[in-house]
Image 1 (cartoon, rainbow, N blue to C red):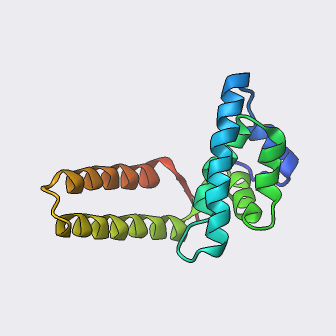
Image 2: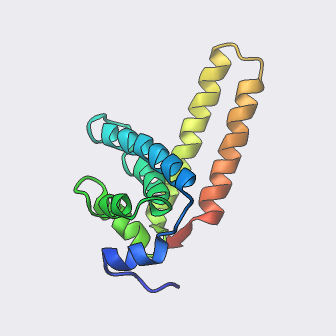
Image 3: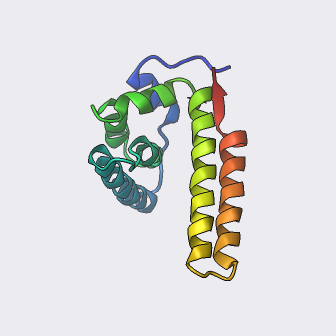
Length: 146
């Protein structure tokens, strides 16, 4: 198991990477889109906040150290991102279980609504494929902490 990083400086040193100027501009632009979605989640019930901030932090870690630091220290979702990075990019087991359940429920509802809308099966198949990929990714690629 990885040693927990205890400061923002240690996290930035561990995860920041250099990119080409073109990639930096692209990553910062896409990161800002994710941040806008995360900020919307602060006020809209049911809209995720940290789920949008995690990819933004990742993109900023590859493009802009100052913005990466900001994602780790801001008052709305900084503590959750700090915990995520300081523990070696892991999720608590109960959070991971909730994510798997939520992906399954939302996929089932999406398949049901797509069926009611009259889709001949292509939409449902696509949703099912994305569901399987999502479940596989979360369960096997994201590390769990107790």
